[in-house]
Image (cartoon, rainbow, N blue to C red):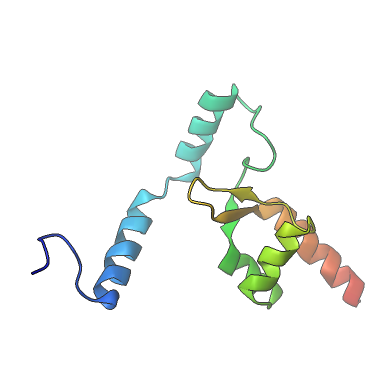
Length: 107
């Protein structure tokens, strides 16, 4: 027997996970207020100042696999920070700059 509160099927877990995840996100102004409190008003490191993108979002923007993005980060080609759980996050401004440069290279 499965204890109450545990999910039995993967689809139920995915639904519960996505609902919980959406509720955990902060508004941009709330996040900025926290960064200001932690780093003294505007002194946050560039890697965490601004929006952070997930690996799948970066992969989608560049139309490559998530593995390719992870390899780029490991080799230092794209900056990233690690969450306490070990997942990578990528500063949106750095990704934007790379997209602009990639577009210029193809022109």
